Length: 250
Length: 249
Image (cartoon, rainbow over all chains, first blue to last red; front, side, top):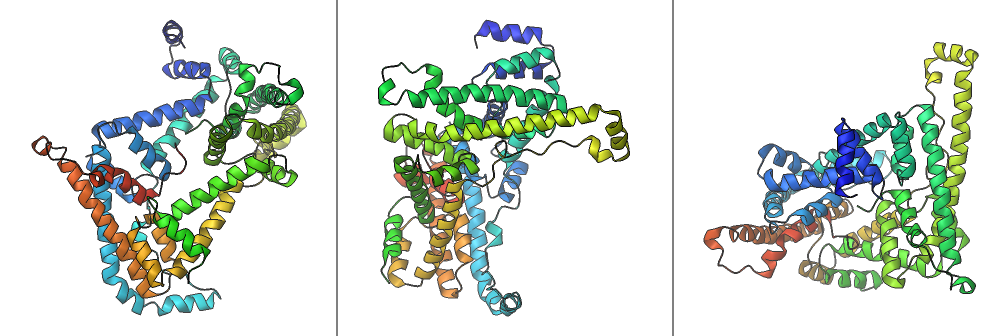
């Protein structure tokens, strides 16, 4: 979106959330995916810039054993300071893990001697009892970034649900690429029947168009029709089909 | 005993990162490639694909990347998603009909009277049909989890063998999630101790590298050269905590 259009949108909207949603609806992506991803990235950037040494957040992160798989790699990619932030964080987590493993090795022989009750329990349940995991290495809390991401996602879904009561937003939504299926499912559960019907019908029209583009893309791969030019919307239809099913690439 | 599984592990131990993560990612990638290479038009595979409305986010985008990297276009994926989109349309049609019926019912005075008494009825939303929701989980995840269980069992059996232990000690070691999943399957106290001790060695070595990397960012020591191990330490630390990076993100 060009700058003048962005300014125009912001000037006509007194509600900043509405202005933000209007911008997201102009992008070629699910608006909820796009806004949530931007919000999560902002949080990670801010965290790496000024909260790496925040003791409260560090404790919270340590309880979750750092970040989840997806966000750990996202944080690593976001560290633009030569990896010093990630180094500080993971030195702390590694030190804690080393302590946990040392403690486990120290007390394992004692626990082993007392493990007759585990075997007895396994015998009573008629299956082998699993051997001990090191519970201190397991996450005891949700990944901090996952929490931020979920909160942001819920907020944006609520914003869009509220804004869809307005006729101008319905028109914007109809022109946009629309929501991906995972977000649509969440939205169906939280809006009234009339909005649900609007969303389902709009999505149906978009999917029918997408299916037509995919069919054309496939047809033009057939030898007999190879000379027909593939339109831009046909060429990326298969990528948009993936994005509709699972959301934008994370 | 030397068998194929032991040799897979021997190969995996020579790669960077957790060997279980490496083998699982290799198997997932092979499955996606094989489907695209020769099962795009297979009826059974297509039915499974449609049942789960494609793959999960991670594997759907991995499929897209695989096809672009290998064939430079998206014909295989497009063919498979044609069926999924048709199912989406059927599901949405059913949902639209159900929503219209519910709205018409809610307008009738008799229904409103009943709904006033039984409050739950008044708020009832039609169930989401197949096509809007999947009927099965992602097939790549399902097969991957199955394969991973087999890998963990194999690792737990082989770790009693001296040669296998030597290969393992020379590797980068297991990531912490796979360490715990492995310990759950090892009964022998000596083998458990060995696996934990190797993990401890790897974590301690990386902690030293992390500390050095951090120290050398201090302006007083900035002239000291940073070694390769230190430069890789922060990436290695993330790998130790969450497992190898799957696919090129």
